[in-house]
Image 1 (tube, helix red, strand yellow):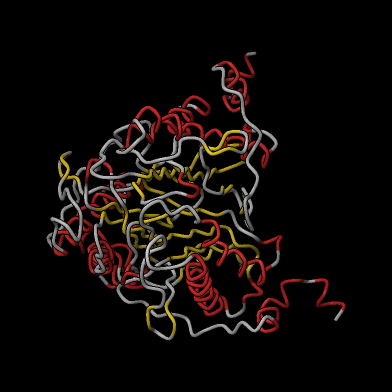
Image 2 (cartoon, each protein chain N blue to C red):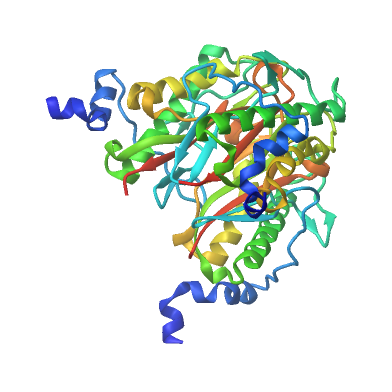
Length: 162
Length: 162
Length: 162
């Protein structure tokens, strides 16, 4: 136990379980691309969507038919898919040294301004999983549309053990 | 011939030729930036546009005046410019170890949903050039506008031999 | 003086001072993320906004209420915040080997086409600071909206000395 406490990376998946968060099955590519590539110490992921069991969730735009809380949940759902992809690629999330990029792209209309709260759906999941010393820098943008009409897309790059 | 078959990287440009694809002259910067930078093993490119011989092609938006097939061709055209830039930077496309990022940004209006098919214009060119084991993860977004009113922009990062 | 001339990196901050450009205090995170992460030789920054002393500047869209010159100034302002973050992370901008990515995301409406001139607000500041041999490749996109209604967001990645 003392040893485990000294290495916070050993309990990432246990932390998620304790929070009641179960990793879903990772999404599978819908076209001629892959879900993740390792290049040197970087694990680079495909843009993650708020898909649950293969079905799009959270269709629509923020500032339109979706509330900020729905946007938060959509972003969390997409980010959770990213954790599932990372676990599949790495065998264990314990190999994540740090998250080095988080991009949150939000389908918006009109003068929507609450992007940061929507993006926190991903950031707060990463905080819960990895702790504050592994948090990434963040790019947040409102976009015109996202594949299949979904509300958000999440970009993740991890630094990993080699 | 046996040696060539053992190393698939040696025939990338021949594959393109066999497919009837000729690399264009690489685009030149329109401002104070460069078309590509090598940093460690990564070759990072400027956003590629569907320009042919210096002239914008495929102006307009998907979901508006452009069809999905035109969007596919626009994305393929932009990606082909990226291959030309990579060849110029590396001397030979054979030095590409893998494509590590593909971003496809599509000017859309209304409730356009067919982003994946438009993005395949780049993905299927990369598949033809490099084969399935070098395919990248993919970020696809609908955006509000692209420089000079063009329909798509393509982001590419390659892992290369040092 | 001869020694200084042989190493152009030693005078980056002096160049800025000579141009009358003072680095502002770096922005602080508005949520659960960090302003910059070092991963290997890469320094990856959060998306920089045109904020001055904690207050949003340049609110609105290009092609709408903001002129191209205002967009240029907004982009320069955001990029200057990025230099302040890089200086804080590195202690000295002299440790920048090269800028390896510049992303300029511009809130646009209608058929706005002058993205390159708006993006030059960042590119010309980087040119002034680092010189032409350290210029990055560039991604420029028009987006639907930016956090807090601001007009532009700037993404920067630097290659640094280890």
